[in-house]
Amino acid sequence: MGRLNNPVNDSNDVSAALRGLGFRVELVTNAGRVRMEEAVEAFSRRLRASKGAYGFLFYAGHGVQSGGENYFIPVDADIRSEAYLRDRAVSVQAVLDELNAAGNALNVVVLDACRDNPFSWRRSGARGLQVVGNQPADSIIVYATSAGSAAADGEGRNGLFTGQLLKNLQTPGLEVSEMFRLTGGDVARVSGGSQRPAVYSQFYDTAYLGARPAPVHTAAPPAQPAPQTAAAPAAPPRQPGPPSRMVLVEGGTFQMGSANGNSNERPVHSVMVKRFYMGQYEVTQKEWVEVMGGNPSGFKGDNLPVENVGWNDAIEYCNQRSLKEGLIPAYRGSGDAVTCDFNASGYRLPTEAEWEYAARGGEQRRHGL
Image (cartoon, rainbow, N blue to C red; front, side, top):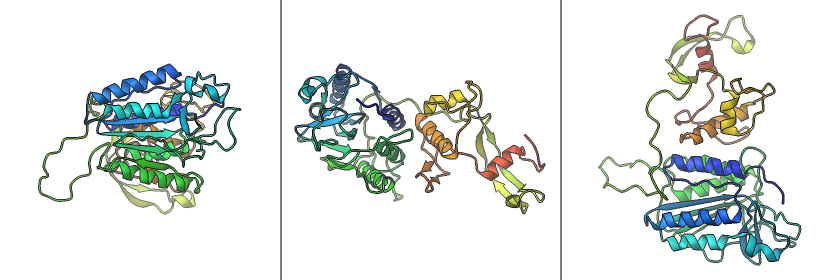
């Protein structure tokens, strides 16, 4: 069975995003069939205990369909022929039936599993997953691509679908159906129309996985209880103060550029910089690995600066570290269409002016630390 590059990263990053929204998360990766089924049963029990809860189940990995039924493929599966699927794989319909029995307010099921059947015995034309036959009430089921199609595993840290989902999952004030509509449009655009997510909804109310949008009127609205999550409250928000290993650079005005430098440094001009936080040291290889997983550096050492990192790698690190710490990522888009939200709470790269101002020490001298 072929190895997929991104499911563990996808699961880790979606888990971090959900924790930032207040969900209690149980992360299960590289699991066998028994562990997968145990996790689903435990999840269903927690939902039963809180009828107002919102449940969110995310699966990334191999998924196949046979005879109109969908199956998750455990990592320890020894499925030598199609006849063994029922006994050695996990039925998607059985998972949905467990969630339906919980009777909670809303269940969101995201299946980034619509990839090619990895087994040699696959039937001709049997690609991706099929539409479920019995969808739970008050549920939204999202496929990474259209039923019967295969989805891209992705070449970066995340699969194509999950990479776009993460950008919208923590956008404040997005109603859940609107979030998936935007994600579907992003995936179709980035894939050039070759991959189109499918959303099937049996949920007819409105729901926000994070904070509700601020009211537009001035009158005080009636108090509304926040939607409950699948289990216990999340960790308390980060206390006020500078982020770890960062220092506050007070803003000011300085003369940027050089009259004797290259053409792109001329002319010298006055620039005002607002206060900002900046890393006290360069990002270390240990910090990079904790967020991104791999280490691209040629000269290895936990406390050495990470190297061999391009601009796109750096902004991905900023976004992934933001998600890991429950912050709103600053960057959206991909390739030449990346934009930065300077009001977001997450990490970003310093601007050219901020970098020069910090390097000068906020003073007017040409060189400084």
